Image (cartoon, rainbow, N blue to C red; front, top):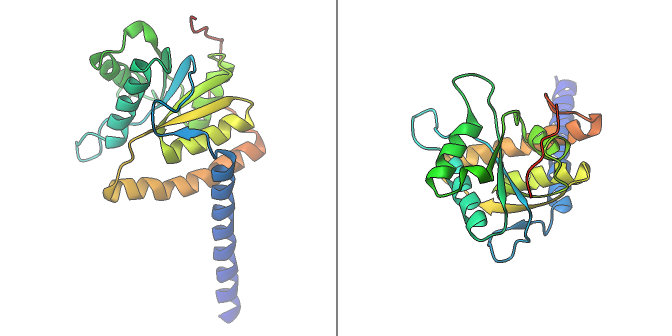
Length: 211
């Protein structure tokens, strides 16, 4: 019994070390690359807006979604980006993150011609790699909450993309805490993906974003 308890203890310690190492890798590799204010962030042609669902399971608006919309509008209005590339999940006819974002961005005053949709952003890794391989962007501004921006920038750095992040307002409370806890595991998955050279679910023909 003591032998098994030791093994379990060592296994748990190993898992904890992996989580801490992956988190440290993300934090260190993205230091100084995320911004909280429009005045400080450099100009890029395209802002990559990372998708999420508009509504929670209880029917309330997802604040992560709302705050990302607000952040993208701020950047565009400040002329820090020319285009918003919305990348999200469109895995079924009843779930279409990019189109929902587009509708709310237009309602917030963004011209339709300045919004580009990527329907194959099933994961953050897919969204970031496709921004380069499909939409041909070597320099990009990623728009999401800070913890998410950091992971996306770490992926971008590993793939030869010069990325900065504009931090949307964070979300507190139980929902915010749960998402941040999941982020620790997402960073471990990201490190494994980078180690094995994981590719997006779909690539395809290149798409040119106008000047």
